Image (cartoon, rainbow, N blue to C red):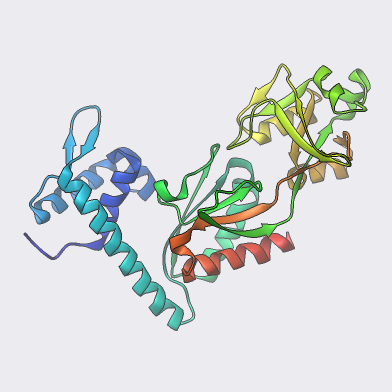
Length: 298
């Protein structure tokens, strides 16, 4: 066995295990699938074991691969910790950082801040991904999830980045045709634009008003898994939408949308969420503080 194993090959191996295929790992790493397969082959020869059973349809990790995966994660974490300590001594964080967020908020708000973060700390290597589902940071290998919503699992660390709440709104043309609802119950008779986005329940709006928290079942001809699409439909007069204040603010300011039942809101603050094992990470701490500072300004 050749002990001169490249840490880059270990990172490729760990990524293949987490993603479940060479092609998915290649996409995540920004490499070709052929290159990923080549590096895994080299690693197998160096370790003198087969890490995966391959077929035309899928790959399966072997028993030896499972053992190697556990050791590889430990080695990479120790290496990253060493780089982090050295980086902190130089007052500059260094190393890899995998960050995720939701489609709309990630694209519009988080991505520009991350670009500024990378410029401020050039020794960081940042991979940013957006999803329309709730991400399991531990299982999927993410260091940080920038998440909207106050329901957070207790085994995760959460830092509040920005206050936010969701509001009901619609286009003036829709209200002119269908009337302004006066109670939550009246929403059941309206075209409501429902969103199945991340952990949001489809067709169930839980709102807080002067009598506390209330839930109303809503429906309509249009539903989507993308908040930006629902907001565009609302602007075009298709119905009532429940959307974050940060997203609807510009449309409300110019009158393109008007508030509906403004006494009701849904708490939806922005949080930085990460695994307990990264609670002392300098890279994560710098990133969270940078995000908090810039999102508050925004």
